[in-house]
Length: 429
Image (cartoon, rainbow, N blue to C red; front, side, top):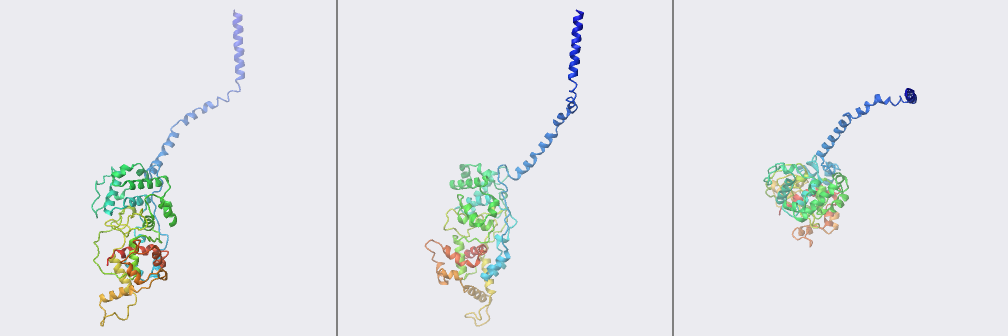
């Protein structure tokens, strides 16, 4: 028995010695054992700390542009031309512009150049103002904005004309508008068609099909083609957008009745009667062009039923407002009087009085020659005078071809001249 135990113990000893001899190369793996704490260091808060800091920039970005919104929603359009050169060009084409430029600023190109443009806001406001008075459009837009900012403390009703409106500083993003249904928008005062237009426009901005940067940099033809493809936006609306918002220098809205009437009077000599100035309703600025209500109307389009007034001059909100007729009349008179006066004034044997000088100056402006292009279209002083009381069969004062001919010499800065024609049309005979 003892021998068996001895043999067993000897065998165990031999096995142990054998196992120890084969384990001699294995001390290398244990070497990682001292480094075993390293994986524990990996579990240390170092990794979570770095990842926990990552979401902070995205939160800040979300505050500037809500998730899913194309950025940027606003741009700052700059003049693509030299304003002094443009004015000099128009004065060379028609010396009457000299006195006008001296006395009446061309607001679309001289005022508010540091304002941001939000095309979605501008065009939505334009659609809201379709086929309604500017006062009604102002009220509907207020309810529209208030719906999206219930916690902003906005008044239930739009403030009276002349008072500041805190809603002017706010406007929903395309993504916010898209969450609304047609019935919800109708409850705010929009018609079914307008609600569909606003939702379609917002969807295009939200998807990136329309962007502020592209509209600000695209050529006029591309802007026209792109926006006319949007439901509820017509040619006249795009022309107003390009002129007042994008500040493009060569826009001629031939379908605008106000432009036609003003251009007709300008071409026929602009015989103006002095009239009492309309009440000064003020020009309080708003955060951006899109916050401006539509004008009493610079004119109404004849060729595009879908065209609607863009935010432009209207009491009391400011924006790209047309000059008051009385100021333009005074400027035109001053411009005419700056030219050499006739040797004598008919019926005046003594030195002319100020009133007679003024009348003579107007008569001199009346004889300003028409351009060859205008004469080629069959226009003459007699035709222009008759057209003022008898429109064309289409209901227009001038045809598109005639508008082009009368402004041929203004190219490529027709927008500047167009701006003043609206004021000239507003001065009644």
